[in-house]
Image (cartoon, rainbow, N blue to C red; front, side, top):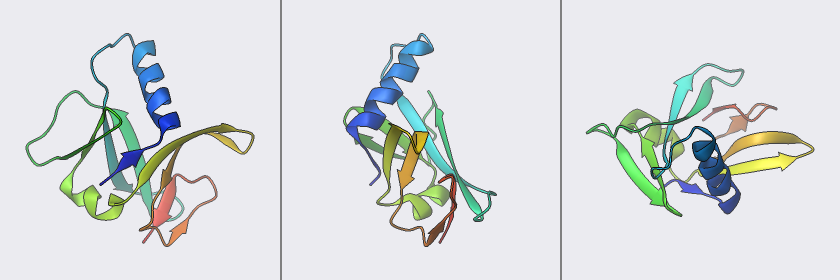
Length: 108
């Protein structure tokens, strides 16, 4: 399962409204090669659900994950921080053995 914190949920809904869309927010979370640690997170709004997607729902947010990315993301929590140490979405991933300083890439 992949979950979202209350702060992440609020920010997702805020961004969705800012785009002028009122439908339930679906977000796609995936993992791609790259970054300083070897793998990078990718987060985007997505209206379409592919037949091979795994769909999780937490706090009213549908989270779409392709099967390949799911192996890296199981148990991950999506959070949002707006503190002095950085602003943006953060992935709390128990599968990551190493993360970079910016928190956008990781390795397993």
